[in-house]
Length: 118
Image 1 (tube, rainbow, N blue to C red):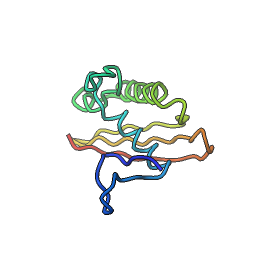
Image 2 (tube, one colour):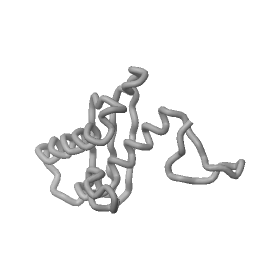
Image 3 (tube, rainbow, N blue to C red):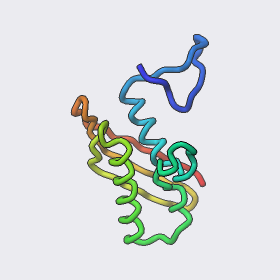
C-alpha cells in the first residue's frame, strides 16, 4: 500500500492509503500539474503544463506540449512506467490530458485522464 494523494486522513484516523495503480496515477498527476520551481528541493520537477493553456493554440504547439509532457514523465517516472501515448487538449479554460502507459512492474497497460480548470 502507498500513501494516497492528495494527503488526507482516512475514516479510521490514519493516513489514507491506496493501491499501486492509483499511486502511479497520482504520481503522473503530480508531474503534469507541478510547475518547475514550485518545489524548493527539486526545482526542475514538473512540466509546467498549466502555463501552456494561456499560450497560442496551433498543431505545432500541441505537438511541442505532448513532447514536453512525455519527456517529463520519462524523466521523473521512467523507472515506473513506459509512456505509450499522450493527448493534450485545451478548450476554453479547461485543460484535458490523456496518458496511456504501461506499468513496468506488471506490464499492464493503463490509461489516465486528467482535467484542470484554469
